[in-house]
Image (cartoon, rainbow, N blue to C red):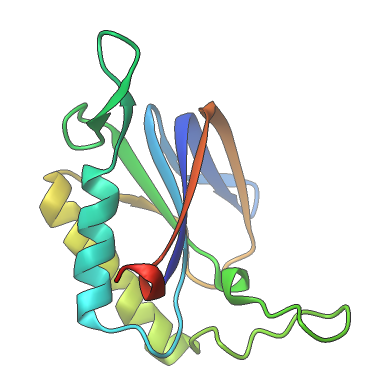
Length: 150
């Protein structure tokens, strides 16, 4: 799994011209799922994101987690994070999981994050043409690949 994590002041997902989801202060996570992803990846990554200390404390130091500041979480599936650009100019998405594998993993990730955060998780719609907007706070953007956790 690959996650692009952006600390935001606000973020939203629009589908077919209508607001599908929106959050205020929190994290927007773009999540790429591949065939090799397992339940250990879901558990590790959801815990890492919820507990990542990237919000400012009273002294302006990034020392507070999403969970600690009661921030919001918006998770959007994005298979293009697994694009291979080694050959030619047209990316290959061969590593990205097919929907029959990716959808259950995406749903399990959302459920694990909800359990850890103790509140509703906002989402995009798997496979939909989405317009994602955000106001990046900082900017703070972090990329985590579960294959690099050891």
